[in-house]
Length: 124
Image (cartoon, rainbow, N blue to C red; front, side, top):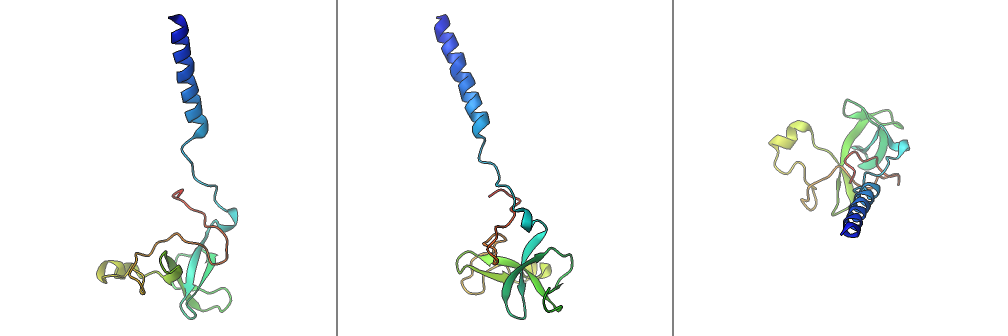
C-alpha cells in the first residue's frame, strides 16, 4: 500500500515538473534590429519598406525626404502590403480594411519586405 502511494506521488511530481519545464510554447524572442520599426507603403511608388515608428502620417520617406509613407497592412491571400486606411475611414467606408483586389481582411502581421522578422507583441 505504501509503495502504491509513493509511486503516485512520484508520478504527480513528475507531471508537475514536466509541465513547468515544457511551458506552453511561449513567445519567440523579438528581433532586436526591428524594435521601434514598422512596415510602411510609399504612396508615390506603392512599394513597402521598413522604417522607424513615427507619430504623424504621412511620414517622411528616408531617401526622398517627402511625406509619402503610410502605415501598411498585409493581405495574406495576394501576399502584398497595402497602405492602411485612415482611422476615420475604417468606421465610415465599407470595406476600408479589406484588400482592394480580393476583399480579404488586411492584417498587421506579414513577412517584412526587407526579409527580417517582425517583432511580434502578441506571441503568434
